[in-house]
Length: 248
Image (cartoon, rainbow, N blue to C red; front, side):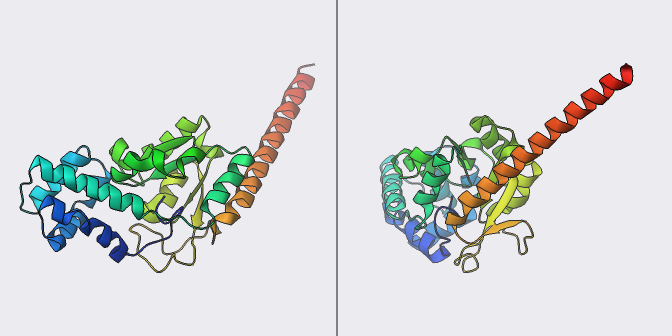
């Protein structure tokens, strides 16, 4: 989601969101941000439990034992800041509408902490997706093939029939390709401005600069898949006929 449906945002932007709940939990802002950064892998993989337990654990890592009231206040402050800070690419919603109008089923695969699944149903994106795969819920992160297989399974289609669109973070291009999906790298104008761990330095596969290009890429992929299926069916029919003739 982040860097794909949303702009690629700087670390300074995300740090400001993190600071919004530091006072509530009783940890100095710089120490809180550092503790959140240091526990990113565990948080995005859901290894600390839900958001309340996660915040308690992170505070303890920062050397503070918060009260339940402080944890609750910090969680509330974080969710408010998180909701207010959500930004979408200008063509995100129209692209999703266009894909849906073309009969495409959509799944979201996101490396995320618990904030996103908690607010997901209240975002303008939720109504456009048939399935979600959140890393913190699945307790693993990209490029784990289980995430991509889960997306295909929840859509009810083989992975080989899926396009996977992402900005490349978390080695997701290789992760999706490993299960048979066709990856498309979204390399927007902000792509090189902000670092995303695991993003490929070079990519020779399908590539788009804007989300608005994706419906045409998806339509071409579907047409090619159908043509391949028709060719396979024709080959099978010819083989059956040949076998029948040879037996007579």
